[in-house]
Image (cartoon, rainbow, N blue to C red; front, side, top):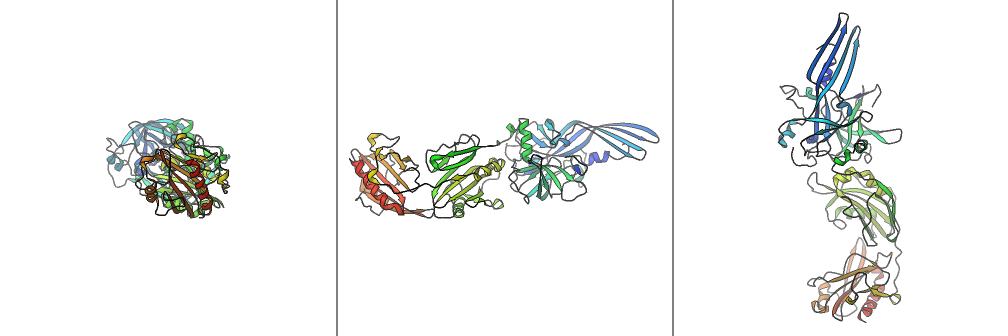
Amino acid sequence: MGGPLHVRLATTTALAALLTLAPTIAVAERARSPEDATVFIRLVGSVHVEYEDANGKQVADVDGVEVGSGSGFFISPDGYVLTNDHVVKKTDTVRISKGLERATYTLNVATIEVCFRPETVRAHAMTSACLPASVTAADPAVDLAVLYVSGPPFPYIALGDSDAITTGLSVDALGFPFGRDVEVGKLGTVRDIVPNVSISTGTISAFRDTEAGERRFLQITNSVNPGNSGGPILDRDGFAVGVLQSRLENATGIGFAIAINAAKDFLESRSLDQSLPVRRLRLGAVQTFEDKGMAMRLPEGLTDTSPFPSHIESDARSAPIALRIDRVLSTWSARQIEETLTGSRTFESLALRAREDRGATSAVDTLLLGSAINAGAQPGRETRMEYAVLDLEAEKLVARYVAPAEWISFNESVLHESLSSLQGRRFAAGDVAAERIAWSASPGSATESGLLVPQGWVPQGGQPLSCTGVPRPGTVVAVSPPNDAGLVLRAAAWPAGDVAPGTAASACSSRRGALGDGSYTVATSWLGVSYLVEGVFVPVGPRVMQLEVLSTEQRSAGARALLAAWVKKASE
């Protein structure tokens, strides 16, 4: 960042002392503590001094001195450290004049070292606190550089998403202000002293964009000083959202950090994004799922693999981030559905809790957005969920991305934009006239099994009720009318000797249905909607079939007539 009012913060007291006018690791994992992955960068080299006054000119050369220091942090276990370009600048010339006195200091960096705090050295049984580093990539225009340190794996700080954060967010600035000079309680050589990490708390007060409207800098209130440059700016979850770069001269509480998404662009331009533990997602065009009555912008590479009309699910092999969308009937509000999604295992097998610092927000009146994380997870191994609930009155669409927290945080703005684009229409459910149905063999089942289903109906997930003591069926099928979430026919079949109809029906329910001793009825409710399950075990040739209809309570009379017609057709 240029301009006379901005002070870059890389070089600390070692250089400040020269500017007088006198002529003299462990298993590869995300760091449990971000301090373990924040490093002190030490530049060692030579200083050439030319001093001139009324008495003439003097020249001096000093080798093997610490000519500067700054901060950085590991971004991958493979040994890559992110910092500022001005922290690791190879040469620098400073000219100072005062009256007739003039001095020129030329600094040449010979070696760069990355040093760990003492606690990290002990915790990871390192043989040395400082390791040699080389510059892998640098760009003065964006003021970013990447160092490489041999000897991985290293604990690293995972990257967040600077496009997903808002002003007022609490952040921590980590680094080494004033370098070794802060270690006032220690005696030792310069080479031996590695300062502890300093942590400054603050908030994001503003964003500073480029002329193209891209978020380039985060303005922060944290206390920052020379030596902090290159250190991470962390959100409350410990993800890096910025790289500290400068402060406003002669001002308090006005510092600037390079937005972490700008750093991602820099890494991608050098093909260093491949070294990161996660990958960046980008949104594709809107995908319309006409048969499912849904549309949404999905990240590139994600597609729907579910055959069921009320469900969308991405291919688990395409990315660690899973997308699932369910269409459900419910009289509840979107907020009540959200509480069920995050407070129970109705939709996901994980025990989740809503993230209080990122509470649910409404993008529009009918769309509820939110975030949750699994409770009690081991630090660094959390699972996160970003979700949306679209209110279609009697129906709701429940969409969510579920993945390791590291993947979600890295791509949060993309996932949020994707969920915000969710669209849907209600299914047009109506009464089904049993006498007008044409029956055919169910898709994927053998004709001789006798599992006939209404022609043109679409497959659904699930199977008939599992009843105590009844063996697992060899064949199952479930279908529903197109664009109808309130009616499902489900069937199963066994060899005749495996199941006794009356006994099996009693195992399913103590309530008998309208079709004799082999029938049963079960009333239940889900998400505020009452359902009725009516079924029957019926012998058909060498088979016993379980035929069952699930419907909302309001449609139970038509469903019962449909079940009777189904039994009659199957028995012919």
